[in-house]
Length: 321
Image 1 (cartoon, rainbow, N blue to C red):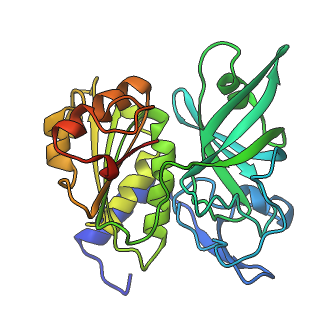
Image 2: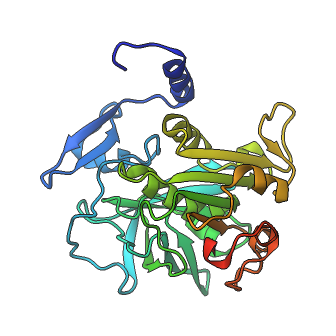
């Protein structure tokens, strides 16, 4: 802090006070630095379980863009061990899966990307795609955001897993959009619920790169405040990265003391919180089918409709993930 205590540092501490912990760096043989937290009695054997999984800093320095990897996770299904399962809303979990120390899920150049998970639940085999919700070149682990739907589906199964359990998954890059630093002056991200996951991956890539000057505008719609995924860490990053990261939350069922947006995403929301249509602007939309259709038209249709179409955004300015 350089000995300076002012309103900025006081606000930073107030954001952190409920999630305080000591961060430290560990020098590894490969030369990469890992950000992790020390727990009382931590040992080398359980160190991996405490690395960056609370996401106080979702943009760590253990990124592997300059490495060659021994494993291609896009060539078929591989077994991955669950490191940690943590509720981030009443019905949604952040699942952290293990990779070798010096490898990432490595989805570039097609990031944001995801994985397809295959599992037998009861007597039925399920397959479903999930977006990776961490930097695609984070080494040693990767995250998925999974909603715990009622019943015996894959979401319920994954949320019931414990640390040490394994799942079969295949890295599956997306083809509709590939994020590239400084390609656009402004990137708008519009989502609801777990539609945050691929957009959070874009946010991680943009803010982790010190050479990237792209401004990120996030509009995130939910029902209640407790449904807002990753809110603490995004608020913290919006504060320290301002004006590069601007966030507008909107709730359909807000509490009496909620100070953010209320109601539903409409044309006035987009006009106020998105960059205007321009060749230097890109807008990404993700969420439920009904939400995507409202904002940008049918998900399967590559042409732009909905509210963005009414505002004059062209097809090349918008991608539906």
